[in-house]
Image 1 (tube, each protein chain N blue to C red):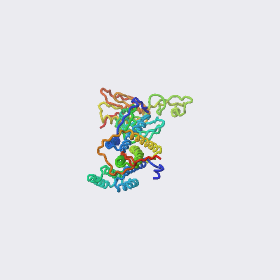
Image 2: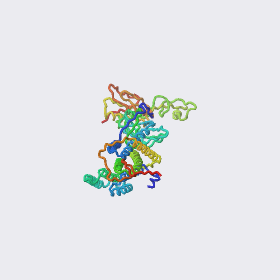
Image 3: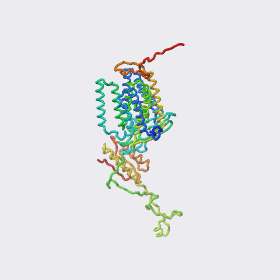
Image 4: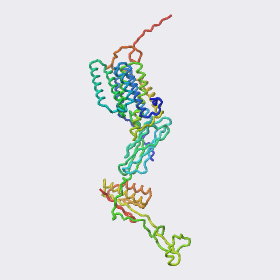
Length: 328
Length: 235
């Protein structure tokens, strides 16, 4: 959640005409000219109504946006091409006066979106959200939140900007993992290590220790040698995969597709229960698993760039490597 | 109508529609108060208003060619009458704005239609101000100020909500909102009175309209005439 910090002075307002407002003001000027020209008292009365509506409109618009606070709630995960909800908690701090017709929208920054509240009762908070569909991966900056009202008549648009700088990392677009040839994919199952531990494969045989689980007895050997022989098993380690992406020489669409393929492979291997690492030019993510690791890996791919003088990726020597190349 | 009076089951759309119609009715009263409008229009307008409220949704957007032909014909007639000198230009403009308003009453579908309707009603009030100095104008004006405030605010709210809703909304209108809008209307009226009194009076006198009939009655005219001589007697 991002709390709106008010570095922008709280008195700052922006005022603009709506289309209706322009017509209304034009009409008021016309009636004013007619009243002054003819001296007709009743036209002065109509002019009074028109001017009074403008004044009342200004006062109520100010009362609507005054004392309203907004907190932005960013989504935990945002993926390019997939809608995500950005929430606003809108609070009316005024004790008696409600706020009408409030639009809360993003201003500046890379993200645009808005939401609308018909009525915000006094001393209350309402949740509202807008749908944001990022068109690209990477870092998206959010700058200001603008509280806008056209209340009560829709003649003018009055707004109050609030500084609420924030950032959101948009993960690469989800695509199907590429079909890899066998020479590229040296798939391996859970493999043993040379250490004694918990696993399926037999590491060595030794004399049975009193009190040990009977399931650890190797019955056939025990029968042959005439005493109880126990089994030590090999410690198994999880399947370990490293997704390798050399982005040097890639640009534009081919770079984006390569990143999307790498993300798809990274996620697929994690979903299948392996420890997955990532090797890209200039950076390496050691193999691991879990939601935190998934987020770190996808963030690394989301922020991937091509720069001059980058070094080649260094794959994990103890893992199967999945090489991703740019496709057309 | 009963729902309207009891404020039951009144949603934003129907409240806005009723408020707009009431504002137009008040504007009509203000322009009809002068008694200079042609009789067919005076009879037809309330009928059209009632029928449009009942059946307007069914014919909205239909028979546009017929309406256009009728309006062109009416405009031509008014222009000819003004050129021939048999009709006052202000009266002709008022009658034509009434015809335009009748047309718009049958075609209320979008926010733009509602705004045009309110603009036409405002034109009618201005025409009424130029045509009549009756007390009835004052009463109609006060009623118009209240209804038009409701109509303008509800139009804004209704279309803001509808613009942002994926499905048509039929939310019931909270009574508190109506009460606040009534308070807003009273505030507007107070402002009107204040500005009316405070606005400096000047008159350039160009294109000033002189009433045809010199009937003398108590009212809101900007002319003052002595109609009786007071006699004081001492015993």
